[in-house]
Image (cartoon, rainbow, N blue to C red; front, side):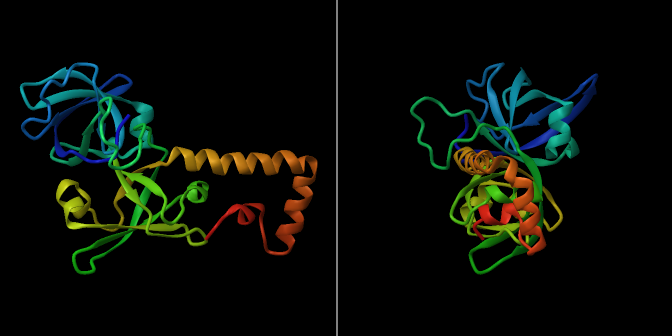
Length: 230
């Protein structure tokens, strides 16, 4: 488990393609690898990876399988790229963000960047299938960072987060421009709540659901609209 508080920015120093996976060598700031053991978990831009080998004092190797490469932004990394990293939470650690599994749900696209004084606003476009899980004032994880959704527009399929200078200093978000791909992990309790409500509606309506859906569609409404809060 991770807390969503990014601890450092690492650099991809090398990568090697092997049958069925890709091996990454990541270089970390001094001290990050202290007591880091083979088999330990590290969040790399929000993806939980396992240390397979230590390389000197401040680097380590990680293997990433094809499914993770396809689902996340790790598939497009190249030597020299910088990524957010966090070591697994220890028992009793302060949860400054919210609990994260390191299992990315989808990639989103950075739609735009605004820079009010002392702030940095990211507007992020969300695939339609996941819009239902995003709520203003709720938590969401972006590239491994636990952030609060400042605003969300489900009809248009986007949400915004506001970043303070300290967040920009500790992460790679200040380097991101419109069009960048981002790893998103939705907040699990929110997902469970939304899916439970949807399943309950489906179960209660049963055989009536197709007819009701068609009736609502004729009137310009769909069932999903009844479960969304814009």
